[in-house]
Length: 105
Length: 204
Image (cartoon, rainbow over all chains, first blue to last red; front, side):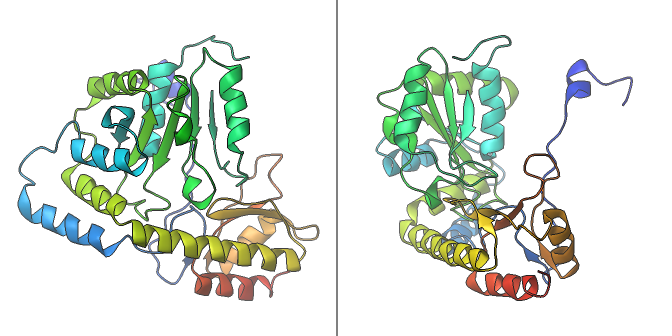
């Protein structure tokens, strides 16, 4: 506890994620990760992108990825929001849609 | 209102009819369904988005797309809800996804064949794992996720967690009641699960 903390920081009770151990001898069955690597296409595209334009900001609207997700689920891009992991989206959703003292039925 | 489907850490899947009931009973309330594990289950609530203005479905690339290290998730809902999220996001950070994450995520979504193959393998390994756990006296909740939640009548969950850990196998145990006598085990490859049972059999 620090005297510099806000009320919000004091109130928090952080979730403790499962351990991440960098030891390849350990069998990691503790954080619901996928045991298989991503598609080889993913690795190739990341490498190509790294060689291309890292000096430039990414797209703030992430339109191409939104289009891909939209077509996967037969939705329109205006139905899609992308974020830095679903954890971040959940945090944004709490701020966007939840008010104190609102009752549920 | 917010709930995971399939649920964590119980792994149980709620049928879409029940999700509809929740949506119908709360028309003035947003209902957020966290579908992190949906690709190991049955139908997504995404099909209900056109009919329900109060529904927001959240998914992730961290589980079924093998990209936990990349940090990409997405939400789906009617445009008004999406705009609400965008307003909040843009007040913090215009660029929440970097170029590498965007490139990787796009490629992952496009490669449906790979996605189907790996999720199919995990589901198959899950069903085998559940059978093997039950043979050993575990009660296993009916999982539709990439993990199982199980309890044993004679072996305390906390002890199992520690003993497995000492033998190089990391699982999850929550010491909070009422789930403190359950272990949560992520579904690994067939080979990893064989090793898991090999070690488990020396402990129970």
